[in-house]
Length: 512
Image (cartoon, rainbow, N blue to C red; front, side):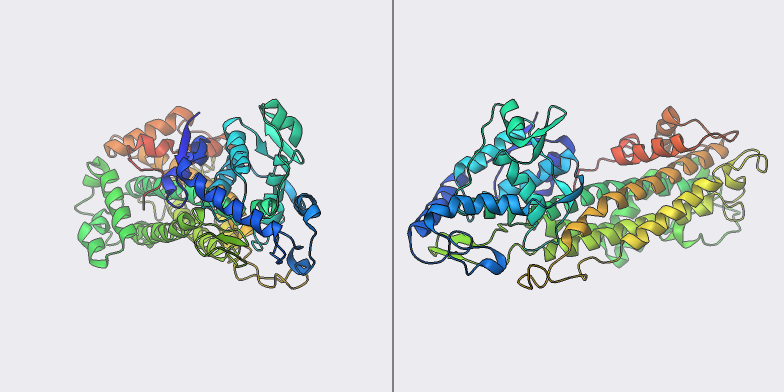
């Protein structure tokens, strides 16, 4: 298993993508350890003093005015974690939980949280030894931190809660013991440092971004296939069109599509004597729409990269100023905005892809392809209902794309009276990406079928490779058959990046 050394404050999206896609282990750069120790020493000084310091020797939230005796500070942290383990619903996938843990390490590594090095070491060891807390997906409103889900993570460090190890879900203490690890008793402020942050929302938003970024690039391949299948024009891909507008996503999308279609015999066959003057927008405006979505994804990703490197605890230990200060970095508003932006991009990529599917199965618009792409229409329905499925998924994503960050509600006896709703704003991105992958999967099948019907004319070399990859798993559709497995196989080709590999698109995991 790969182990990445992360420098808090300087981790890139590519690093985070590797943690997610490969489930890499992580360790913090040893250079950050002195700052972690200095912050912990400042907390110890506060514990020994008489001044009230939020979360160190006081209650929490609305109970912050209650002073806690020094002998009860450990009990305070234990009770905090146990009382906040109120997550409900299905557990998030292991890869998501591991990314969350890595993000928590990065936040602690900024040296502003006041935890002992033992806490950092245990989280690193859990990642290295495959101990993954079971974290319910629901229960956070995205301020004051992702309290409930992060409490489920923290509980395992104490030997409580549940964790997965070697494919088994075990009580926290048993999972740690099975990996040769021991529990810790949380010291002053350590429980608060573990649960007061945006790592749950940020992890799920990053997962949504990674999937959307891959799908966006895959859509450039499927859209090129649709363009060739319906004998569309490549004139709208002329580079000067896109440089005159100047948006980078549009330029990138046009460049990729132009490369995908270069050398197509199908395209060359209708450069002259074609009565059509312009293609519908779903063909002609692909760089403008998908490119704009890619730019939106880039903007959201930049916010998430900053947040991944942030100290989002409260209070924060400011070593240079010798202060422990209550603030609001736990508020996940930047993550909520980013999640909403990603949702909009996903919905629009799927919307224009669905219109291409509708076009290619329509004999009025597909330039002499058979109805619904079946060689014997009437007796066979071909891809008729596959197109309807894409319409259903497109509409579902439109509903899911409505903003979440505007839906604040007061909590905790009005102490936490404005919240970000970033957690479920980010959580919905997973199902949205799955819907998008299925829409693109249907377009992939329709594009391959349409290109097959243009024989003996050949498509471009890159798209020939894509069609060959499709045909490894899904045969050409002749007589009607049970199509659900075909649709799932095609969606998996999109989700896995196999189509990008077949098309020889050299796309970094994340490219800003």
